[in-house]
Length: 292
Image (cartoon, rainbow, N blue to C red; front, side, top):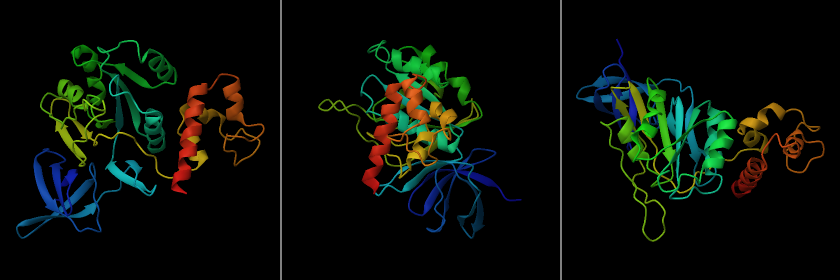
């Protein structure tokens, strides 16, 4: 009988694995052409004293980002949820939340929005929280000084694989430590000079929590999250409130930027799509020119 493993992390030609049943940790080699990523379900054969990954099961989705040439770079596989953590400090870069949400919509990954460090300023995110709740997203306001605010998220993680993302220094480690006390993520403190987070690790790592029977994937802290090269239509379909209007424009190839009789632009005029979300859409589409 072949045993299945989840890939917890990879180095050049080696992977740390978690047994899919026992969750015991082991290591295996893989051929460079195989390219397993964190979260992959793999089969392993024993060859003399070595364990070798010989097959990667079909992925049901991937969490990705752009590489430096605008190509889609896979970071993690087989993800149920994405926990997007923002904080009062460091202040979120413009559009980073919407960029993550476009990815989530495309890959069928359920988003959990966490606005952290509310103890610094409890009012700063109020409007955003209301806005995203109205769009149907699960939204939480948290502080490490109020563990009850973090524990509200805990039931959502049970029996799931969740990738936790956000800028360096937003408190991903503090939040995880409350929900999963046995797991210690590498922390990224804020720089005193810039107020920005310090990068801690470039390795995406998956951890297993026995109490919740849950996996959490720690994605390296970033300052900005880049989407790979997408068409205007692909970006638009990642905005949840745009979806009901897609296909209703006069032109089938409408970019929703300047065309007459555009259903999206009309919805903005009618205030059924918020102006700030539409402006974010325009900026994201405009940013794609850098991949041209």
